[in-house]
Length: 120
Length: 107
Image (cartoon, rainbow over all chains, first blue to last red; front, side):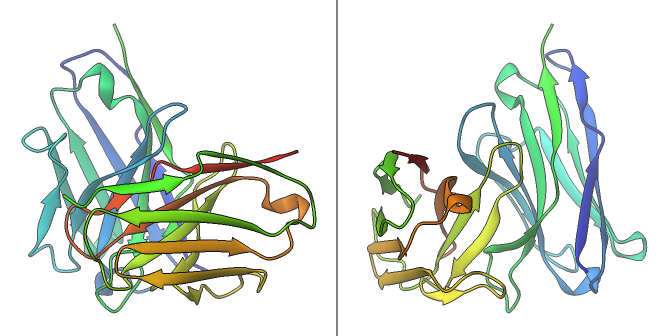
């Protein structure tokens, strides 16, 4: 059974940093590209970042470029999101999501999400 | 950036109804479109990819159609567990984008 479990969320002040983790199991993690998608309270879904299976290709949404860094450790079956210079508008539930396979970047499995609250 | 217009934003319906949700793209995306269902407090779940391919385990009352710029999600006979919010997503080009969502509520 595919499982994605996020952790690392919490309350942080504006300008602060946080590192999210996503532990994957039930599939060959090193064969799949991964993503982070977020959802602000009461709002819709926003794609945040993408990393290919070998980490050779990385993309970011303009809203987080230069502040967030995605990475992965295939030996540990883990995905990460380092978030720096956090702003109020980064407050959201952050989901890790697996690509659908075949190189197509729809999201076939999602974690349960971890809440990041940026507030003073 | 490919902009997506999803409509309606709110849909009131009764159990047993046939409902349709529309997603229109600002440019053609072939069939690189997915649909998701999200219930309150839960992660989204994939319903359909490649515009019309049903994800494994998804009931056959869900169907998707369209290509290019206009797409539709249809629920043929609404069940109680289908009251939720639905999102379309294009994966034709970076950045991947989502529609604004359609909340299907009980009439």
